[in-house]
Structures are given as C-alpha cells and as structure tokens.
Image 1 (cartoon, rainbow, N blue to C red):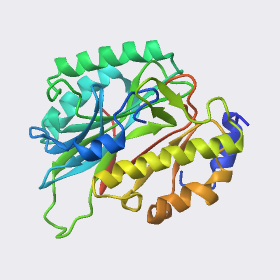
Image 2: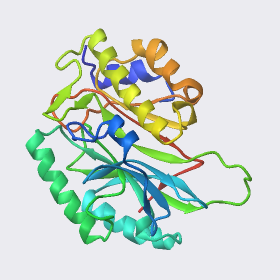
Image 3: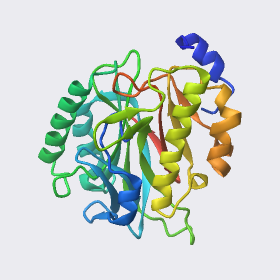
Image 4: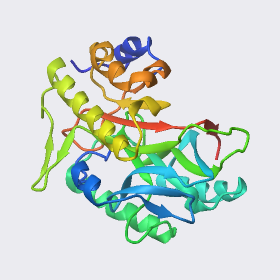
Length: 286
C-alpha cells in the first residue's frame, strides 16, 4: 500500500528514524577477486571503485576520519558544490577531502534522463578537479522527494585529521546508496519488479541489505559497525522493521533507522538504503 505523507509520518513516528538505481556497478564477486581500494591521496581517503559517477564506499586514510554535514537548507547542485568549495578550506580541508554527496530531487526520472544527469555530473566534478583517473571518487545517494527542486545537495561527507584524544577510534566510512536492482551484464533487473505487496517489499529490502552487507564485508566491516542507516521509500515498510531490517542491522539497530518518505531516482525502483559510520555529524548553513 502506498502511503500518503500524513500516513507515513504517523507510521514512522515510533522510529528514530543507493549504487543509485539502474547504475551498472560491478558484481561483488568481481570486486573481491581483483578490485582494491584506490587511494585519493589529496583527499585523505580510499575508495571502492564503482562506476564513473560514484564510488561504492569511502574509508579514511590512516590519520583521518569522516565527518558528515547536513545542510539546513538544501542547495541546488552547482550552487551547493560552490558553497562546499568555499566551506572546506574555511575548516582547514581541501576540496579533495569531499568523499560523499547526498542528493535530493523533486521527482523520479527515466533511465535516459538519469544517464544524461550523470554525464553532466561527471563533467562538473572534472571541472572541480575532483576526478581520480576518469572516475568520481565520492560516494553518492540520489533520491526523489516531494517538494524538492532539481537535484539539490542535502548533505555531504568529508575527511578531517583524526583527533588524538581517542587512542582506539571506531572505524568511520560512508557507503553509496543501494536500490533493489541487480546489475546484470546484459541489463539491470529490478528485484520483485512492480510488486509493492508486503512480500514484494520484503524481497526488495532483503536484497538491498544483503548487498550492503556484502560491500561492507569486502572492506573488513559489518553492518554492526554502522552508526547511521537511511531508508528511502514511500511504501509501508513498518511491518518489516522487527522481522527483517532491525535484526539484519545487528548492534546498529540500537541507533535506529532514519526513514525518509522518498523514492530512488529512477522510475521502477521503490527501495533505497545507505549506511555510514561517523563520530561527528554537523548541521550547517552554507
């Protein structure tokens, strides 16, 4: 059942509550066999390669940690990136420290429209000097949310020198959002396509959580290391919280789940989840 925003707010009130849809990312088995973390030396982090417009995950280099900043008021992509270009040097970090972007838009798009956006996005990052080789090293979340304009920056993550006050700091990382799309060699395949029944949503959500778990496993991490889980859907996911989502999150379930009334960026996909681990999160005006 599709929820109205009012119904969603009521249903989600009890909770302390993507690679993006249709992005042909490499299979985890392939990554496990050959691909390794690539250093972004100027940024103080390493990234797990994905597709040209995003990385699958980012981890800080030795001596650094990842901080997440949420914009009090989201900014249009180009304008927001310009603001970040100004903000990071003000806090003593180069623009290359940017390791993750969380984007919002007002509506879902077709695959062709999403591909066109990604091409323009890569070019904007190239102009900013952020590419490593031919790839964007930052992770990314894209979701469509009512009331938003065209592609806006909602939050971003960046590296800072690790404080010496904690002798054995917990790991920090950011993982790109995952939607319920199997990226097969021939074509993307949506899990339980068109099925928004409870069973369909269960299959979709289980796939997404397993993909995230597998990605973290490649990095020597697990879902229990997560400090922030964001779930994006406009459908009633509440019945799956106790039976599927929270048990899968293990110790991270104690922190809760942020449930956003939002959709993956491409028409046809209904569920998206991203995870992260941070010691410091900010809300800023830029």
